[in-house]
Length: 351
Image 1: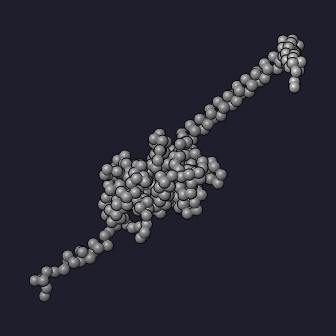
Image 2: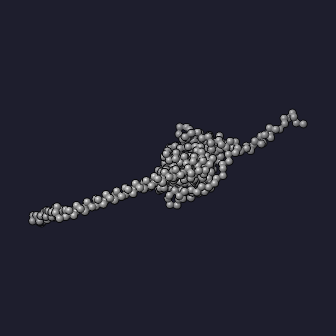
Image 3: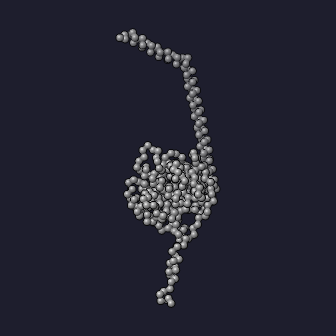
């Protein structure tokens, strides 16, 4: 059994060690420790100030570069989209200022924005699947070409939107066709409209620009657990991107910074989509905004590309000379037969 003397010796040892520490700290080591700590604090403060200066310089350089690109943009894109009509489709949460800046570059390139469309939550809401299926039955009658038998509602809706924005009246190609107008009306009206329009669509688009920012990736998601709504959104966006690539002369998807689980990342990773639609990253920056009309120009000229500053991406699109859009009226193939029938003499005039 441990006796009282053992406890006493232990307590004396503890207090002795404490006394020695106090004596050293207040005596010969006091100045040395204080100087060391002061020196370390001063060094850290200097490093912090140096890093702050470097950050300020980097931000200033970035701002200067952005301002330069924005100022040079109109000259860089001039005449790349002369007399072309572009429909702009906002998919998801698109920054209004960025969209406006992109549309300014389209105008500087010589294009006319003929439609500004925003997809509503109803476009892919899992709660409205039955509604969309019923709507597709009405849309199909106005589609030409019509989707193949067994095509899902996502593809049919995408066809309706893209054909509604690009369908021209053969007799007056500067105007949208009657079927195109009906498609847009069906999509934009009712209790649960699938799209919102900034203004009435009266002229057909040659090219389609799809804007997105930080939207869940199309196709296989790398998230641990994608919800039914995530998958529904992925499928609907994939269908729209695919149809835009097939129906429009030029089709570009422009979005946010390079990152995983984004629409653009999924397009680039999908061989079929990557071969049919061009993409532009960082559309919120001046460099990305200038790249958009150049990418539309290249895509309309048959050069699909993926542009940005990430691995495997091309820094800037190479512009190409585009054939002017022909908006000459197309004669009705049945008009001649009808005229011939009208020229037949009446029965009483026959000899």
